[in-house]
Length: 106
Image (cartoon, rainbow, N blue to C red; front, side):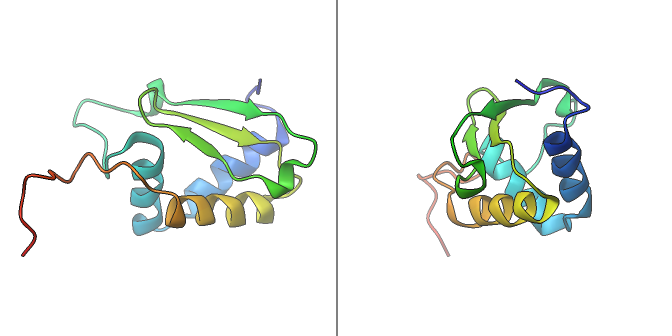
């Protein structure tokens, strides 16, 4: 759906580069279910797919943690990419592979 020259992709990488450490950790948890990459891992297996919709600015990105992928609407501005991505990574986390449910919280 996207190529590296698409404006939405450029916005996405600019926003990700501007994220602080905590936001990047939340992003990884959102798209991968873990807070950090493995020691030998990298973003080389990460994919971004175009999420098709009539009004893309009103949709949140969707992650597929099993596939380390993100469905990203074709947002109209960098500010909307930032807003929608921050909302998604802050409020839409269901999988946490860093936490063992068998462990007791202190």
